[in-house]
Length: 397
Image (cartoon, rainbow, N blue to C red; front, top):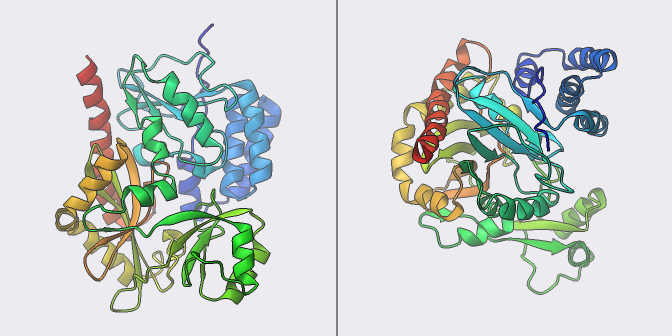
């Protein structure tokens, strides 16, 4: 089978994310790529259009553009250093932005040549792959990814190049499995998470609270939700009924709600990344609401919150040392080479784990001098990842 040439001209997520953070006109960018896709009809133009539309939240249209791209090519070369830099082939799932690690946002063309290959879910790796020095699975756990990961486990068992983030390790990040895996981890709190059928929740909402169902407050979310979509705290049976009326899914993840507010009443959610067992800071978001996301926590307009995040970066070594047993357990039990963790620090000094996922974004693209501490703070992670890949190659040499 002939080896296809990777498509050049693919931009990845990084330039579109940067444009959104700088209040760029994403709609205008999408129109430009729509025009180019129509004129050029290249795989890269269609894939760039799909990325722009995904950033705009136009998922249905974006995935249609993505299918047009994949009908033309499945392998794409990201902008990078070229030359003798190691070639890292990223195996990705077709789908939304949350499906895969946007590694280009962390590396931004530095240190490694990145090639992205979108697997065919119907026949993973039946096609020829381009030459590469190492291979990395970038997909996170989802209902669509699970059978693909199972197929890749067998396919990659004797792969002739280093494999980063093996399939079996990725599967362990599924929320229910992860909470079970970390149940007795030292200085870790991750309340048990389980899948609950809709019928049981509907009975509870109707007043017939089933035996064994956790009492409120608890959190509900659909199995494949990311970024807080469909996530809600349920405090009463009435709230449960209203939630189910708005969510059509037939099954939900349920976990006990833990109040992690600090003494000032604010909630602080931390994202860290682990590379080969070493932990690095990604960000700290401070919010008045329990559901914290960096983009809506008010970090951009609040100098006090940014000062707290800057202090977190400065003192991260002490934080990592304090929680070394917890991070060691996370790394050892998951067996992933690279992944991110969203967590908080409880009042009794434990790490409250929200999720661990190899597909989370790590970046420091915020513009302006006020975010210089983030650009400086993310650099050690970038350098450690590049060193880790090069080290794996040296081990095989």
